[in-house]
Amino acid sequence: MPEPHLDRRLFLKGTAVTGAALALGTTAVPAASAAPGGFPDYTHVRTLLTPAQLAYNPTGEIIFPTVRGVYDRLSASGRLGRYYLYYAPHDAPGGICLAYGDSLEGPFTEYPDNPIVSNRWSPHYSVSHVSSPHVMWNADEKEMWLYFHGENTTTRLARSADGVHFTYDKVVLTTAMLPSGTTETSYARVFRHDLPARGARYVMVFMINNTTNRRDIGWGWSADGRTWAFDQRPLVRHTDVGAVNVGGPHLLHRDGSTYVVYNKDKESGGDLMITEVGDDFSLRRHLGVFYDSRGSAPENGRAAAPSFGTDGGVPYMVYEAGERLAGSIAMARG
Image 1 (cartoon, rainbow, N blue to C red):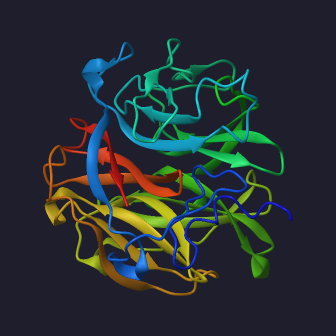
Image 2 (cartoon, rainbow, N blue to C red):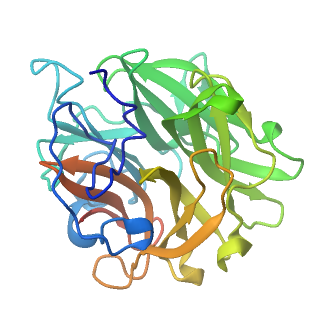
């Protein structure tokens, strides 16, 4: 049978299966359903990466992990490991980085030639920093597509056949595409998701900031992952969930519906929250805390920017843990 939409096949009824790292024939095991929406109850296990252990460490901080299984995408002779973990410093100069390993529980090895994308890419751009890597396997093109920001006003796309060496493609989102007063459009993640009424096959979720310096979550849709239209209203407003700011969104799918998971700022509790938006994005059911960040070190009351995957049918979440710009990349098991 044909392969399903990979980034949509996140959670199937009674099991936990994520599109971040799936091969055909993967068998999922039943998972406890304790989080809102019937999702697994994730528990912190260990730290995967800290800035101090990295050779490329220009600013002493790393953020925004994305984990992708490549064992069913790249040839055994051409890949570095079964899983690729992308991350970045945020502050200038930033730089899109890669680590690789054979298990989502680690260890992960830093790629020796990081950053794989820097803040200068002639003739395409020269900016203070690039950050927030989200890599999507594009099954239509048989490529890894990297979405990243630099500056905070601009989200860009680069493409790769091997997940390591990228070719610049284009700008996909800027503040000019949203209402007047928008000052940031960044931290975007893109997923394969059909919206027939809009003629779309891909959905983007991202963070919006404006002149009030209060952050919301926006969304857009695309037929090809390159040319986008954007809703001029936020998908989730910070005021909807009693937060000062929200960001770091990720889509999940379960039992015939779609959800967005995102982080609240530490002022508002620092937890991961979940809102059901429905397969057509017409719902706004705010379901509360998806992951409580207060339970274990090194989170120190803040979890953010989650990415999801499976290993041997077991669900995992890879995320930022700890103070913003002073934390680590951690892993939780469902």
